[in-house]
Amino acid sequence: MSKFSEETLTNWSSAASTSEEQKISNAVKMVKDAIQSSEDLQDKDIEIFVQGSYASNTNVRANSDIDVCIMLKDTFSSKYPEGLTRDHYGFSASNYDFPTYRSAVIKTLANKFGNENITPGNKSIKIKSNSYHIESDAVPCFQYRNYRYNGSRDPDIFIEGHKIDAQNGEEVISYPKQHIENGKEKNTETQRRFKRTVRVFKKIRYHMIDNGEPVNSNISSFLIECLLWNVPNNIFIENNTHENRVKESIRYLYFKTKDQKKECKQWGEVSEILYLFNDKKWNIVMVNKFLQRMWEYLEFRD
Image (cartoon, rainbow, N blue to C red; front, side, top):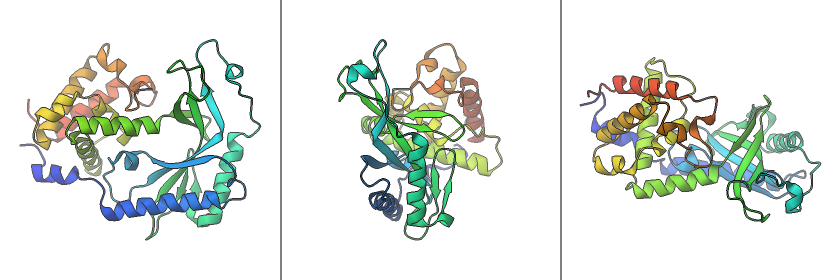
């Protein structure tokens, strides 16, 4: 028996409640209404959608913030196959830059929610919660068109991501739509056990932090979901309790990350477009130490 009962793990595996879902919907609607009523933005091609744990349906903490992506598609960034440039696709440079767009989004949200209820950050603009909508992180970004990944020479055929020019100078490229679709597919293939296990892992991580365990701040919810993405489906299918699925997932990930020279170096994020350990935030040693600490915290035995 582990530190937590099967009943507790079952409760932790549950998806968002109906009331949370309504607050999510309200937050997205309010951001859409703000953009559509903006003199600076209403005529631009902007797509608004949820990304992150709420979009993946792997969120675990009630009233944790929701990421609302505000993606400009009139102006975009691109990655082309070797030897090709925007000229081969008939594109031209835009004089509308990211700081101008971000400033317009901030102004729009301030007009809608009030200056006192928004806080611009490094990548996003935080919108305070109320009884009607959940706390939100509005994420202004440009569409990112990856033509290199599939070798496309057609300007209308590309892998879509988004790009953020963070305030600290960092360029952030991600593929949230692919993340969502791949997660759904794996969840179906594992009898809906993948996302339940992700939620349990996230709850355990929060529990460790709340109880003073030294969890590296870079062990994020996103990282946990990506790690479990790389666990073979049979581990979810063949183990019929949450305890066994957690135990065998930790075991698999621990031994794979202990051998740093082999398979885990090829692991991808859930999008399968970016390598998981290509980011300076995450390294294999850090992950391996966390898995060992989680195993010990759960009082598992070999």
